[in-house]
Image 1: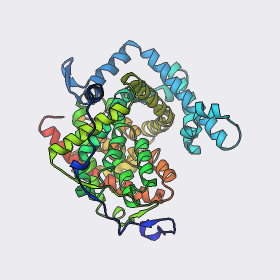
Image 2 (image 1 turned 90 degrees about the vertical axis):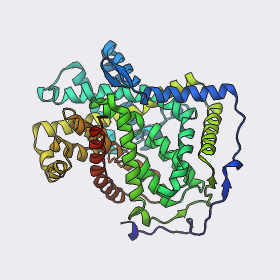
Image 3 (image 1 turned 90 degrees about the horizontal axis):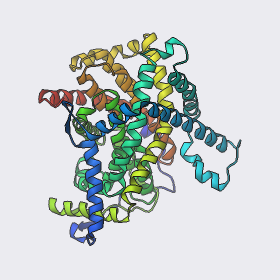
Image 4 (image 1 turned 135 degrees about the horizontal axis):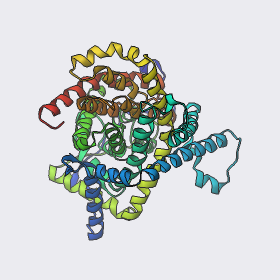
Length: 486
């Protein structure tokens, strides 16, 4: 596996002799707090956190404001939402097709069209191109209710269209508004900076990696990869640190976890699920960084090493530093309306890249589950483990975990009718697996080819992550249930 490949070459620099500079947090340049920038940061941070994490009572149950907003949109404009689903499916299929034909030299795009189409954004592999295209006729059939009964049944279209498509097409774009307020106007830096003191002792990572992790959790794993790649190219990370960040911290983002929770009908306990998901992610990361294969990746740089200075300071110092970083980012950032609009647009674009894939794969998985015994046979060896761990609906839980390794939304569809304990368990495991064969794994292999990241390496890490997550998630879920949080 990792030890069998040649890592070093003439262009890669050993990090064995690289020592970070020691600095006091008093050396940090604290910006002068301007009232407008401070208010912009505070408004963006509190608004984003309120809609995602603030529990409120509504119609006899505890939920979050985002859930209420999405419920209102669905109840008042369901037809418009369904038309929007078709629009996103068509957009993803058409732009992906143009992109794939462009990179094959079949069509040409002038500079202006390239700026509009952004072919690199829509570029993917042939299988995922096919998934996005196939989703269009599937979506039309389900929207119009025209087609074979086996496709339009409640077990297939009732889940794939009525639950999956409707939920995802709302949660990610609308959630993107509030995520972007956090990510672009200082919340990302504020949260990431506060996490810096724990990154080195717990995960042997520089403090700046907290920003990459926060970018993945607040934005998307692709944003986290981009930040990591950017710092890697400038000598800020070595190969081992990149491998750890991408495979341990670039897990499902806040909006996607919300979408999974919404699909399973557990959005009312979303703050609890997010807390358990983050705890599970951190525990697994703390274990994996200390054992092979991650511990054997060499600490090599591809550019002149630029290690992060190691800061020292009190809790108050770090709070002051984090607030400073948040305000400084807000001052340079877009206006709140522009950041909100950008969040919706970016969320819609992201949805267009995944919605067709999810539609095709989820429909196929649901058909296999409804009309064959494929998943029952596949999950059979894992059912006793789920039973031992006390997870209700052990067969469903086992199938959901296995399906989630391919795509976490697909894993969620399997557990739609399960017990709430099972649903919470599935949300935690599938969201924290980090290496999804339908999206993140291919992107890592492509983006970090000079490390290199290979599918067989990622497959091993996926197995290790899942093996650790299952008992950890079970313990966390039972613990939360015992104290009445679930």
